Image (cartoon, rainbow, N blue to C red):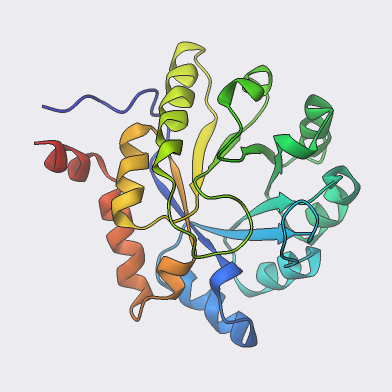
Length: 236
């Protein structure tokens, strides 16, 4: 017999990151994962300052919005994100996640996102403790636990982050809160299952899905792995 996931609130969702897509064929790539069964589209915005690479802006959100009718999950890995909320909301973002590490006035930043009538999230890097965001857990719709250091796609999963997922899940249950727990970095069926068992709800996968010959099967395999039945079978 297995122990229930602590504080579980939501069915598992797959959020496919377009960071790993072939941008020469963006429309086709996005339609392919939409047809393959992804729940959300995850868009990683990087500024070359907070993280080394430079990736997308609001124009990418707008392009994806025109292509598919999926929930758009925008992850801002940028300094001074408050300057850009309006343009991302206008482009079609339905959830904006900011990093604790770059928001000195975190309550204000999250509140500013909420004022646009969309969901807000807070992300923490592998070296950032859960205690750093405890004061805002009653405000956010989602907590993103980075399971790699933010930046490049394709990095190996850091298993040391699983304990933070468990801690957040217990806090969610203890405080009777409803935020979702998202994981991003090195997610595939095996690592996704570890995170699901710890209490995660939303699984960001980029290289694993876009690098698969059969993307629909890759999404299905990940969805099957992050299910109560799969976790029970593994433990038993």
